[in-house]
Image (cartoon, rainbow, N blue to C red; front, side):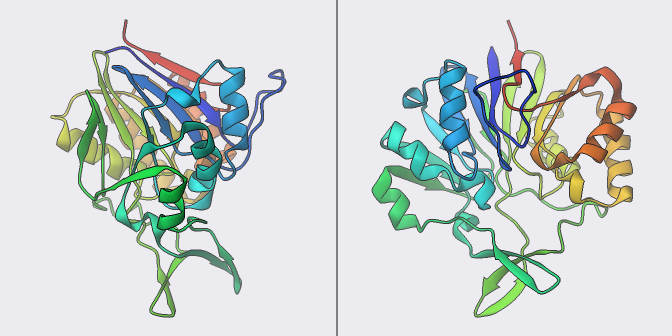
Length: 280
């Protein structure tokens, strides 16, 4: 299978790339086996639409949208995108609409999906919500819920949901990734990895027969992780012998620099305009 992933929206823009924009969020365009999938839409959708035009990507032709999880920096741009696509399939987990908050030092900020389900459906979102691992196009898979088996991947203690009037820790069960099964090996596209990058890789190999992981691309959430989690992640990634590791969004500069120093030439910074082509 030939495939290509292009980063349309991310926190950083290369200095010499004029006319493109970034923001704190994530959006990537996936082309694989005839499928044209938009993975996340950023917080506003404006960089995604602008940059797609600059890179020659026709968002009107996308076959599906996938939401990695229900945070605003990955979902807030949906109305902007739907105005271009019209009615389109949107894959997500049922928890994508939970009321979500970041609470730090008594400061409470709403960080969840900004739109109700009915509003999005009225705008053209054909929502397909499921918890399970599934194939959404030939050799293109969604992980669904990712079991939390690695004790060092503990998640973010500052994230909460509002349930029955109380704020409780958010398990972020809706966190999911896309997998492409290519002739070069598996390619895993991450949104934010709230479930943990290594937990995600464990599920990928469990579901797809321990095929080699050729590439990992996207947000690893290591900017918010402990040093122990970073060290364990590096140790296991070395053992997986990943050929390409594209770091985006919530990876963070310090963690990204450490990953690059430990994993060498396999690492690149997947900022706006970066692309990865797989297969022949």
